[in-house]
Image 1 (cartoon, one colour):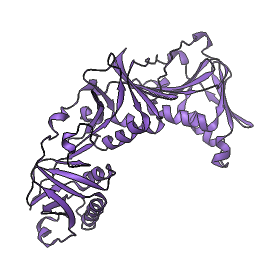
Image 2: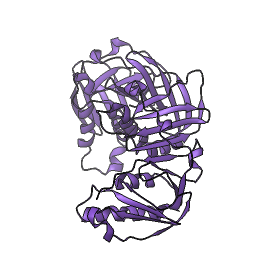
Image 3: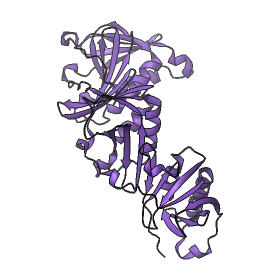
Image 4: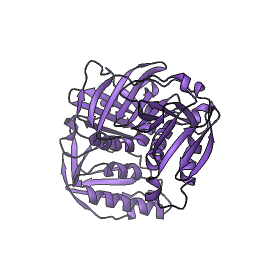
Length: 409
């Protein structure tokens, strides 16, 4: 999903088969890649395989829409002849590569590209001294795109993107559980809380935001995780989140610079009560060097792969001011010896528990500090990672929860 623009516009349908638009190859290629998130590869309706190019004053709007999300990219000062044309997204993208084959990318990217409607049946794409025809889809069959809903929060783009990437590590990918394939955004007094889970792990982050209380959703919004992951690289330094009713249900939007994404509220906004899962009372803590812990976990995972047990968990053993991560080898576990890491333990005795090594590594890599804290309650209780020992009680802290793996002989 990409683009929903701040200003609305009306398109004159009498100009449906006219138009000429000129920009650089790099700009058009990037716009097509962005809106491609909302262009179906095998659409049930042929026109949904198209990229809609239309004029908005002197600006070109490049659009994609698949009924779940609408993505728009605004290209300034690119309109030669006002109009509206629907071309094959796949064909135009491929032609822009084919017509510059053999050129250095830097030289090709700077070339002017013109898409020009010739009549109601075909258009041409012109690059340098070459022109190639393209068939047109019937633009009158293209569905109306949803308008962007009212903005409810303004956030720093860099902070939002960085925190969303951390949270999305835990998002579910099982389409049979759509509730878990989205990222929840909740409005709090201190900004926005972001959360994602796949049942085995839960990541909760925070970003400061200027919230418009009149339009803020009471129960937050749920945004499709796959869509977010694909559009994050296209968002700029200022992001506006929107929410409101639409023709096919409630809508959520992300607008940033020339890019706007408008999508259906994922899974009707239904999500788990993640706050009830996160422990808030400090029981036992282990503070350890993060880099050393990553290295030891990766080493244990490599041993499991070498032994043909890559699906086995790793074990984390905590003792007084010490921590070890080991590959779990079942009956051979008593013969395993690994390096002991120095740690600062508090409120907990000797303890051993299992974790999925891939999930554990991804969780560790989502932190950036020199040290991190493991909050432990027991061998069968969730393990929560935070930057600092007081992270459980800080609603603005990033928290990553991991469910333990059962250890069997």
